[in-house]
Length: 61
Image 1 (tube, rainbow, N blue to C red):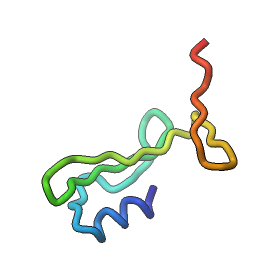
Image 2 (image 1 turned 45 degrees about the vertical axis):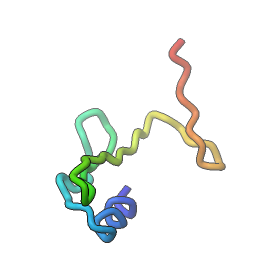
Image 3 (image 1 turned 90 degrees about the vertical axis):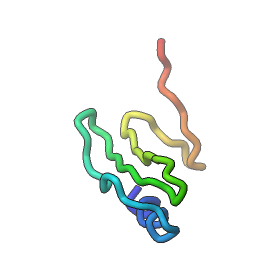
């Protein structure tokens, strides 16, 4: 998260909201790319990642 945010800024993005803990238990931040498009980077601790980094969504069940 922090590294992705820093990389976006280094590539010319404008920070809109630095990454921080959010009310639902995750961590997120926002930036605007040089064309003005807004991007969000977020980490959801409730969605486990496999050893290879792929996302496995919980069963909606």
